[in-house]
Length: 149
Image (cartoon, rainbow, N blue to C red; front, side, top):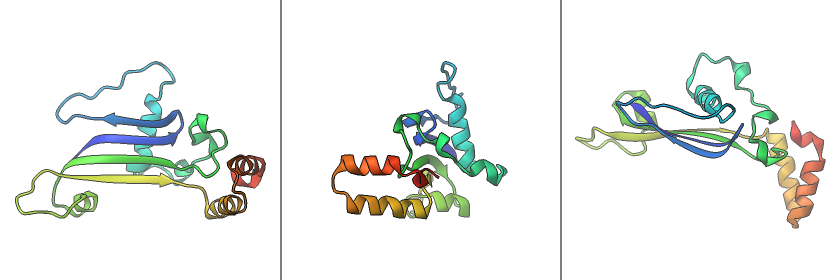
């Protein structure tokens, strides 16, 4: 099994990005300082590293893409595509389709989503339901500080 693609949405300096990896080659990340190389590896670690402390998995508003403004209601999504999955239980969990006889190149995905707490989502729903005008909704959402928790 190997990772063929990583997709990131609304995480740190990534509004939306995809990174493709090739099997049996050296995959290299090249970029200027502050271009997101470390953020890519941290996003991968959040999902894949079982040894990462729970405290490091608790994301804050500063982990959202900076161009969003207040992150109220936005989600951070980190998605992996895998290829060459085998028949182990772990591999089968990732498989997108049932195993067919003779199938030896199974592909699969794993998506991790960070979303606001239930109380924040409920408050956002109430604001949306009570305010049909998008500008009024935006003003209410950005002015109500409890949503930013």
